[in-house]
Image 1 (cartoon, rainbow, N blue to C red):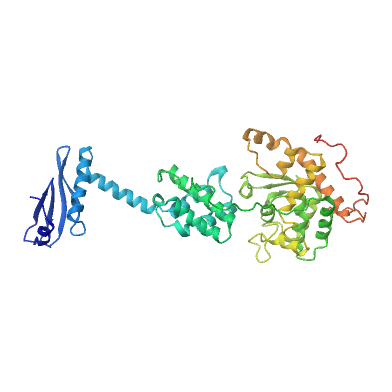
Image 2: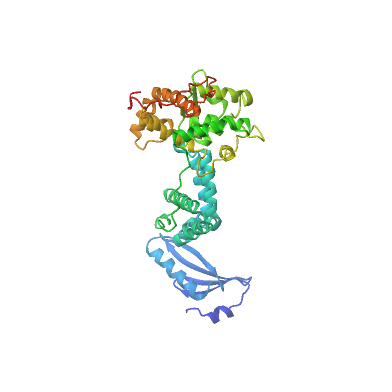
Amino acid sequence: MALTDVAIRNAKPGEKAVKLTDGGGMFLLVTPAGGKLWRLKYRVDGREKLLAMGVYPEISLGEARRRREEARELIALGKDPSREKQRDKVRARIQAADTFAAISDEYCEKRRRDGTKGWAPATATRSEYLLSLVCGSIGRLPIGEIEPADVLTAVRRIEGRGKLESARRSLQLAGAVFRYAVATARLASDPTRDLRGALTAPTVTHYAAITNARQVGQLLRAIDDYDGSGITKLALRIAPHVFVRPGELRKTEWSEFDFDGALWIIPATRMKMRKDHPVPLSRQTISLLREVQAITGPTGYVFPSIRTRARPMSENTINAGLRRLGYTGDEMTAHGFRAMASTLLNESGKWHPDAIERALAHGDANKVRAAYHRGAHWQERVEMAQWWSDYLDQLRIGVDGTARISPGGCEMPTETSAQPGVEGRGWGR
């Protein structure tokens, strides 16, 4: 006889457990302590088994019957309801642990030690910060429960603070985390794939740079007259000659230099392309570095912080020096020395574009071509480095013909009417 709610409520505990059947193998077990437990008796592969389906009244009679039918459907398919219940518990436990924040941390750790494709320390720090902006909204959610609307809400909060580029990059990185979860079998699909175009595109800005030869000369003369920190002045004087990225310059250490071989090797850990980058040194650059070495050498950072030699100078130091010279952020930046060199070296017509690109440590999308060109232009780069420093010295003299002492210690000639490299244009070197 089928059970009723009235019969269940009126059931009293006895000295022994009592079974109140409802049909289809389901019964309510009334314990001596007064508990009322739903149970389902069934057979799988000839063996009798018992499935716990909850406690009354938390699980009502109607819900117990629904669970009985679900279990019978599994049995009809040859599955064991008890085993499936255990699997569901394990899945739920795994999903609860697989929050977006947990998988984000796992992904970042993987990218830090991803061989030659691993993130540089600065990239890792920046990426982890951007992901933390998203984690504030969705970090605690199981990754399998996150929907596109959840991600969009998170990145729009960043966008709403006027940080358009941060919002865009945070969305990209969140997508990378979701795709990593897909690749590791913890997610079916990436919920960010349909969010392209949802955010306001930031205005692309380029690093301000002086690329006019006459104005470059004015800048170099202004640097010579810099009246701030001596180390900052030397960094400002060296930057145009080597035109590496600001972070690569300020974090350099004395162990990276071979003055006898006129060579500076920047380790892969500091390079954007994650490869060692050799930089040929001109006579002028070596002379300037010798001046720095007398102050900060022979070990540790070449340009240490003014507060402690255990850290490099601040990323804002060179830019602050340029501002002190009167150059605004729209006129010249520390990164702008790279655009300055790229423009004037290309305009000279003396150097193969690939040699200039290698000097700038730009990557090549074509891996075969990149492997060939890695060493194909080294001798040309050596000659170009010396030519470039000589050219900068001539620009420092200025059109008025006033001689100035070069960084190498030699007085430069006063004739500047002819720009080196104008004659014989081509890539003959």
